[in-house]
Length: 502
Ligand code: SF4
Image 1 (cartoon, rainbow, N blue to C red):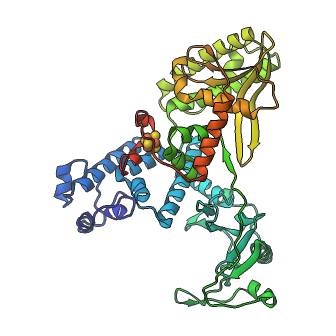
Image 2: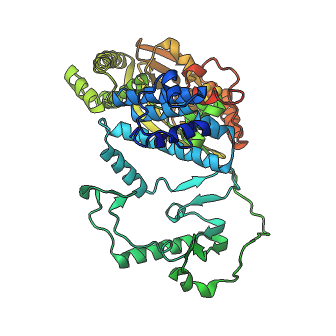
Image 3: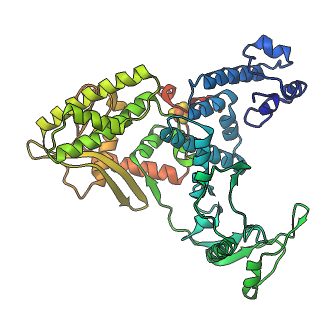
């Protein structure tokens, strides 16, 4: 499958000269052995950038075959090799923005896939894609800006209203959609056990489409435009029977050029943030944009996985401590088994298991000694502050032996590393959001050295931080950070490196 025509696409972006050289090769020629410049020259590829790309793609291919690279990791590696993401970002346009949103969706999908299926296969990936499209989760592109036009499916528009709504392509076959029992996706048969138990029959399908049409036309507050093309390519199109049903209400039929006189005052936009988003924006607004505006998900590093595992085990341990249950070594092992996530490499995994066991044992001893009572753990909160909504989860609130309530954040690291995580801001924001709770102390518990570190609450600094971030977001200001010292640890460094000012 590693044939010349695979390389003729926008993502790889070979030059015309290289593509012409590839075209001269037999259709079934394999390019997998071209890992050196001399070999590329033999088949007529001489440009240094394209030679490098091809050699690196072949090295990546070998790693994928050896199962040394996961799906999401491989996708990022392709972008690293081809520079495709940077190219899209370097030329801002609606089309490129849309591509970035879609690629970001794909990274999220691959991430979910890898978390759920420890043994990747075409069948399980197909199942996830099928489920995702059925969930109607990938049917919306919202361009930024409060006055931007929003493009979405009718399903996604349920419950929303807009001053003007355009319902496109109201022709037979599109709206109502042509009836067909769904048995394939992109021509690939869906395994029978994955098909819905009952597909709707023709009448049910039409009723459902009519309900959907009703939803579509009732989203408009003032102006509803229904477009009915005469032709689709060369095929003559037939006006939808649904449009005929509402014909008596149509006030005007025009060919084009609809102008709107009325000015609409939009409500003040509301920003919803988590602490991680605030931290990302404060550290580097450009990274925030990649993560939270486009929605890119980066591959999880083994140490991050370890952090997730520790948090998962802690939930169970804190529940046991809160309910005065004994946590023996056997019970702890069971908690770990239930919370474990696959980590690459058997040796690394065994090592991690030992570490987690010891660290949690230390924490249990610490909690029994220092806390009188566990008030709550993994407590979700939503705090509304004018046009800002803060959401998050607090790791733990406990009453210490002197009767003070302490807000605790767990960190899977040593004490010396916590400064960099911006934990002071994090605890300050949590405390600010938990106004209804009496909090006397704020602290972190670092697992790798069993340390409890207190922090003081600076209310002014917390409010200033939230207001700075909110106003930056409202201005849609996403510059790259100037001080590049920590960029080496950023998963998007390969994007910035190719951009001006990067
Ligand atoms: S590499 Fe540096 S500048 Fe680029 S997104 Fe990451 S943190 Fe920001």
